[in-house]
Image (cartoon, rainbow, N blue to C red; front, side, top):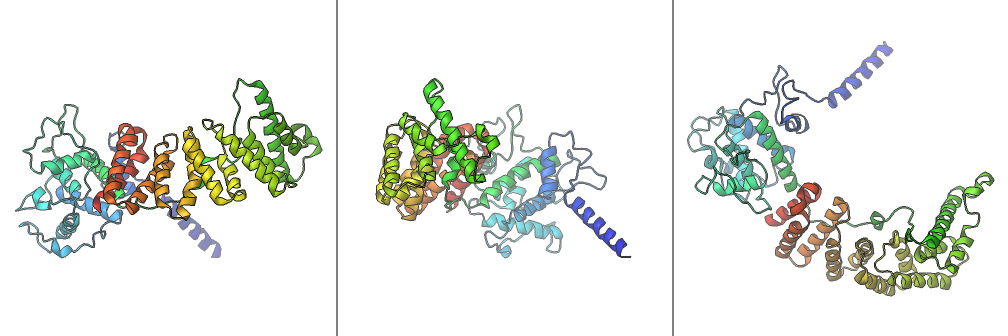
Length: 470
C-alpha cells in the first residue's frame, strides 16, 4: 500500500514537471511566418490561445473584443494595470449593443480606463472604433488595432517620417498613427503601403501584441537608478599588466619568465609547495626571479612590482611605498599603453599613499591617458571615491568621459554607465538636461547601429521614455 502511494506521488510529480514545461505547438503554424510570435503570445504570456482541434488558424481574422481582451491581459501580465491607480468609474461605456451585464462591458471599461489614465495620449476607444455600436464580433482592422495599441503606449523616441503612399495628414488620428508606426508596432508592405483598412489576422495580431508587449516592458522598468560598479568588471582574474611587443624578443623572453614566476606563486599559494615531480614546470624561486627582472629592465614594471608587493612578506612600508611610486611614475610614462589589471595596482596605491595624494595622481593619469580601456578602468576607481564623498560635479565629469569612451565594452556595461550618468544629471541638474543628454547619447551611440545594439537600444529608449513621463 505504501509503495503504491509512493509510486502515485512520483508519477504526480513527473506529470507536474512535464505539464509545467509543456509548450503548445499548433499543427498549422510550424511553417508559418508568424510562428515565433504565436508561440510568444500563446505560451510565454498566454494572451491568445488556439482551438480544440490543435490549430491556431493564423489566417483567420481577429475580432474587436478578442483584441481588447488580449491588450488587457498584456497590460495585466506586465503588472501595469494598477500603475495609474485606475478609477474605472471614470470610464463610462455607452454603446448601444453592449449592456453593463455583458462580459464584454468589463473588458472594454478596463481598457478605456487604462487609456484615459495614460496622460501621453488624449484618445479614447470611441475615437477609434466609433460612437454608436462596439460590434464586438466584428473583425478589427489594422487602423483600429494600431490606435488601440498606441493609446496604451508612450510616444516613440525616434523622429517619425511618413513614407507610406496610402497614408496622409487627412487620415483620422494621423498623429497617433505615426506614433504607433514610430514604435514599430506596424510595418508596411513591399509596395510602400501600410493598408490600415485591411482586417487584422490572428497571426498579425500576435505579432503586433508582441511588439506592444516589448514597449510596455520599458514602461515597467525604472532606469533612473544608480548602480555601483566593481573594478573586477574591467580586469581579468590573473592580470598580466603590460605585455611587450611581439617584435621585442628580449622583452618577450623576460615576460615568459614573469608569467612562469607568477604562475608558480599562484600554485604555491594554492597547494603550499611545488611537488618534486613538477619542479621542471614551475619556477622554484619565483620571488627571486621577480627581483631579477627589475634589474634587467623588464618593461612590465607595474605588474612586476604588484606581485612583489603581494608576495614578498619581508617588505617594510617604506619599501612598498617605493615600489608603488615607481609604478605610478612608470604609468605616467606610458599613457597610450593598455595595462591589463591596472585597477589591482592602483587599489594598493590607494591603501599605501595618503588618500588625497593617491586620488590626485589617479586623476592626473585619468586626464592624460589615451587608451579607452585604461580611461574606463581608472574611472571606476574614481567613481567609487567621488560617490562616497558625494562630489557630484566630479562624478558627472568622470561618467561623461566614460560614456564617450565606452564603445569597446559589453552592451550591459555600456548601458549601466549611461544609466548612472543620466541619473546623476537628473538628480543634480534636472529633467530637461537629462532628457537632452539622453537623446544626444542615443543619437550618437545607438540610433545608427540599433540592429547591432539591441539591448542598449532597449535601455536607452526606456530611459528616454521614463524621463518624458516625468
